[in-house]
Image 1: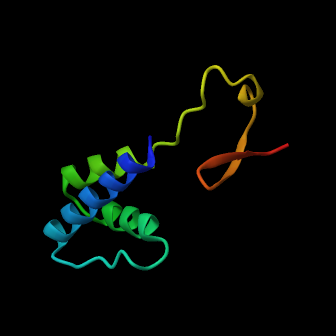
Image 2: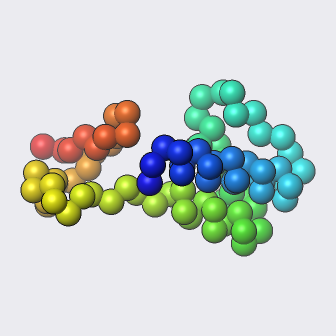
Amino acid sequence: MSQREEMQLLIALKRALEKDMGIEVDVTRYGVKQRLLRLAKASEDPAVAALATSLEGEPALKAGDPAAAGRRIKGYYRGRPIYAD
């Protein structure tokens, strides 16, 4: 998923949460994605749950990347995976 698609999903999730829960989410603070996902778990709206699951999906490894085959991802730095060696 590209950064543009991820931001569009975050904005859609923010708007859906604000509409469903009647709250205002501050997006200027750090960690907005984690906050939105936590709020989405508390919501019972199926549309919010669908948006949250689409955001939670891990980026797939490229099939043509032989270095990534069979390696475990420890974390991410600037959108790139960091492998546990």
